[in-house]
Length: 224
Image (cartoon, rainbow, N blue to C red):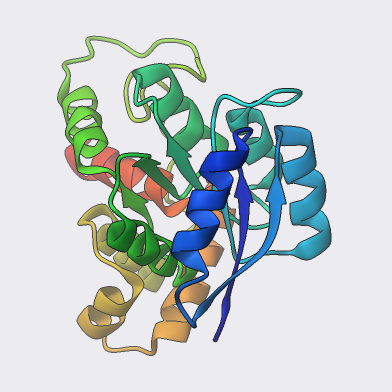
């Protein structure tokens, strides 16, 4: 299967470099390039790519706002120079399924596109450490919802009471950082069935991505 990719970045040279990297692989096809957030949203809705590589700082509509509009349409992989917390947590709350820095090498970028296209999530190692740190921080009491607060810290935790026993098992596996293929092997079912369970539990829990599901699973298992 050819993975259709839309590249959204306001710098033409950056877009050209990304396209050059991706087009060198037979299983990936760049179907469009967007120079701002509004164009990215319009093109993604028209072209229906499997993955959108999204910059954050763009004119007209920033990458986080664009991701929020597209999270129900396609999978968004953030690719940015900036890994400040406001962007990391904002992108994940908006529904991004991955977050990479632009200093990622070419091979890792290509593999990230493949991972996201398979339905799995992927986050830059340096960002992962900060997510773990934020999740592990002691929170004495719940606070009102704040979209800029780290996922899993100080906000209301939705319950998993509406999930089937199998969906609960899948959620627990997601919380352990397992891919769809690993979950399928662990629970002895087809990978396509795993994808269906993941999609259904995200819908039931009102979550935008498996990254959010993983953090919720950690919250539920720790009782926070």
